[in-house]
Image 1 (cartoon, rainbow, N blue to C red):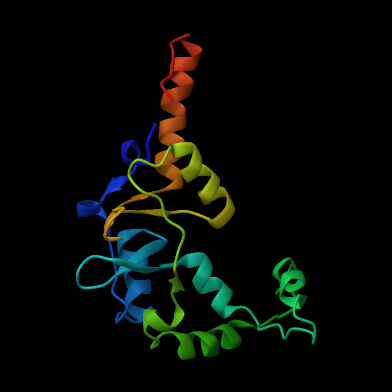
Image 2: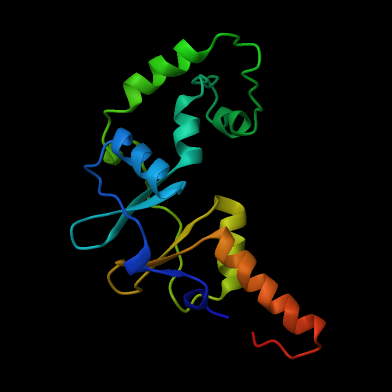
Length: 173
């Protein structure tokens, strides 16, 4: 099954531009009930992605690396608990105050992982497992956004496949 079978078509995808601010995107997240937006240029070419998880990482304390180059690899796997920061709301507010006016071009994930419409969904699932959801779908030739594969779309597709399996029907690859 190709990714095109489970993606949200580009006409229904809520997008942002690199000139949007974090504050504007937070409002979109709240009003539209979403947690991620692909960032496109004026021609519709994918230039990045910005999501709730990325925003939360920007709000966490910054960990300084040790002197050796591979220290970032170790820090990537550190679990940080903020439970000890009682009364941390002013701290979060201060971090947000600095982040809200910033343009997405400064804080978005540049060069996000993506798939093409004919990419098998198993590859899309592998990429979402490794890098998170949603997964942009772009045109092979010009990198224009064609849609999004979300974890919810994949769950729906897997449920449909499971129905066929339970009924003993053959499922097409």
